[in-house]
Amino acid sequence: MALRTITVLGATGSIGRSTAALLEGGGYAVEALVAGRDAVALAAQARTLRAKLAVVADEAALPALRDALAGSGIEAAGGENAVLEAAARPVDWTMAAIVGAAGLASTLAALKRGGTLALANKESLVCAGPIVLEAARASGATLLPVDSEHNAIFQAMVGAAPDAIEKIVLTASGGPFRNASLAEMRAATPEAAVKHPVWSMGAKISVDSASMFNKGLEMIEAARLFPVTPDQIEVLIHPQSAVHGLVQYRDGSILAQLGSPDMRTPIAHTLAWPARMDVAVPRLDLAALARLEFFAPDTIRFPALRLCREALVAGGAAPCVLNAANEVAVALFLARKLGFLDIAAVVEETLTELSHLPVPDLPSVLAADAAARESATRIAARRAAA
Ligand code: NAD
Ligand code: MG
Image (cartoon, rainbow, N blue to C red; front, side, top):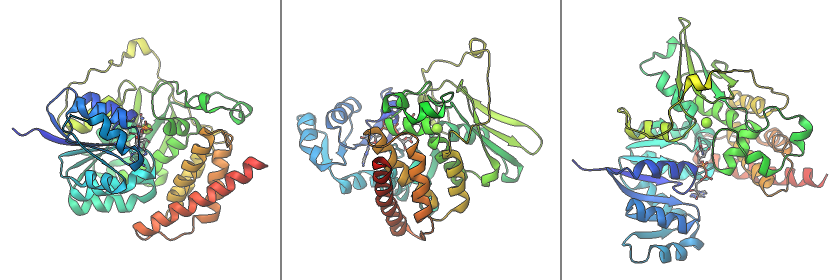
């Protein structure tokens, strides 16, 4: 039997490395691995996985990639077009794990080609949901959610008729500032914000977890993926991160998916789907855990939840504008040029300026994204100077 062919977009990141760990078990033919600019890590991964092609989005990193691949027989390429060409190569399974709206074009290229797309890159669904879903529908591609909450809900929804569903619940660990005061949050450093109590993740999503923008983006992601309206999506703080998502049905039944907080489980679910594969993650020990707690989130300290819900209900350009403004604000916060609480303030002000923009097609989504980045940069500079 021919080996399943695989491409990983965002291969050197947190999700990309967890994916590579599963692929190392063998039984796959890796077509392409794509990263931003970390040429050395990408080349090492390409050698281990015997990939055919390795691509860096940043062309300036191509000479380093070529050096690191010398003598391996692995093809090297660089630049945005090379990323799209790699994403469009026919394979059975693609992991979309580039961070941010930067992953949108390659997510679309992979979907247009067909096959299975394991989607970790939630920002592409947030900023261009209808376009991403239409690309999947048109090609007949299978879109499987990797985000742990959505993967959990997908599993708990198998075989359900849409009208049987009453609501879905996304759980959130609460992040590093779950019990912090507003004063502590105002003074928070990037080091404190990325120090997640449960999950080990990339810097951007770690800050999003601290601000709860991650859960807000996930509400929008859930509204795209599942047959629910915004008022059927609930968020609960669950510090143990054992229950990842729940589906409540009309008859009062609640189905949930539980597991260790380790992304290899949801990634493996999408890799083996509809079958299951062996994964050597620590098993959830419920007796050792003893308690599962759930709390309503605090929307005063975490305005991100309100902003994301408002953007979801408003529709149009609002989710795209919100996502772009958040990306800009998070990058400035990580560079120590913006306070932690200013992230939500910058997003809110950018939304007020731009959420009316029409977004009927991809060029207008990209234009709204660019306009939001410009506004957010200006608004953040003004706040930082104040
Ligand atoms: P990360 O920062 O660890 O990795 C990002 C990857 O994308 C790296 O390989 C980087 O080189 C690459 N990249 C960055 N910019 C690029 C560009 N312009 N072009 C091509 N490649 C580029 O991020 P992560 O934590 O792995 O998250 C990746 C995505 O998965 C995000 O959308 C995140 O929200 C989502 N996600 C992550 C987790 C997690 O546990 N880390 C869980 C759920 C969802
Ligand atoms: Mg998640």
